[in-house]
View 1 (tube, rainbow, N blue to C red):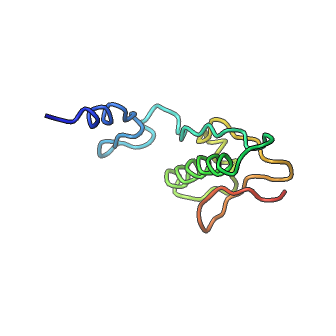
View 2: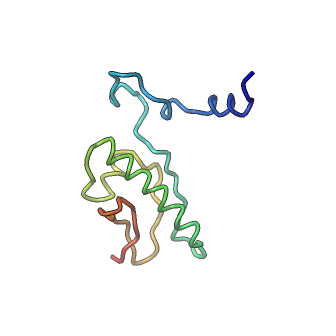
Length: 112
């Protein structure tokens, strides 16, 4: 008899998370390449370090998915956004912008 938690976990997997059959490409998948990133606005007054880290983590996931699927690192984070991997780009704190750390393949905040 299977465990209810395991059955529920299997049911919770979305079509995007399930492995594709051999021979199928990303073009066969009719859904957009969104990584589901809906990072919260990190420019709001009082945004905690945890909220900032969480937002940057979500954007980094989108960057890594883009890099894996496109087989290259984008020239700027705006390529990731334009390709639809980020649904909602959070506002940056004043005087900051999103950038890519090529060594760690992470999204970071840098001075403008």
